[in-house]
Length: 308
Image (cartoon, rainbow, N blue to C red; front, side):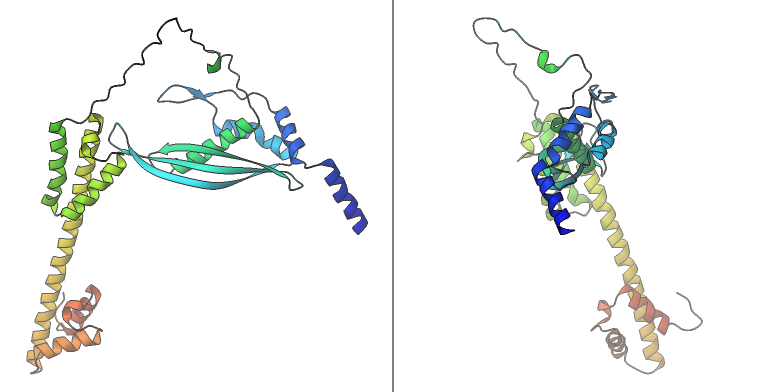
């Protein structure tokens, strides 16, 4: 049996790695993939990852080749949109290993980008990376008659034409003051300077500027909306905290009343009773008791004919 195994290994070695002929076989069997899908917002046509995978799956299976991806680098960023919402932008750098049945393999490394309003931006980036890895590895053509490489522009003699200036309108002084005032107004809903500074830095990072003076005019409304949302969040959090504090104060007052009544009926000292109750709950004072412990002690001390 060992001689047969050595013969098989020698045959494999003499034939060379299987990955090269296998990839060539896949390339020979693969035809053009048409750009049948269309981008809704910009109108251009493209080949989706499903088109590419449907065309290649059976060919890879027949050739005995499978693919292992390895994410080398992944980045996520939040970018504001014209509508004022936030889109998640992701980039991935992926290594794809094409492996044949004898263990021989080829690798390629590609970058993919994806943007989404939810949690799918990384998925889109991975799909883009795989699609272009396959298209470029196998030189898959399209079915279009015209390619952008066929376009040519004839230049005249003399001086080259001047490049058009790209103008961008930045935030005005009035808009800048409005943004700064709204940012300071965070204190009116219960926020403090720490909240203002943290949100200020978050906004600068989100819009990729060092100062609000560098903001384009188109970003003013998204910034104001983000500040408004942040103020609403702080206001809700502060209101909930205030309500919880008031409820605790009310329960503590009720507990103290029951302690006083208990001490009076047993001719004891209310302070000593309070310390006893705190001690059996592992605390040094009533203020250290949890909400659950306060409610439990109220139930222990209240008269049998009362409900809370």
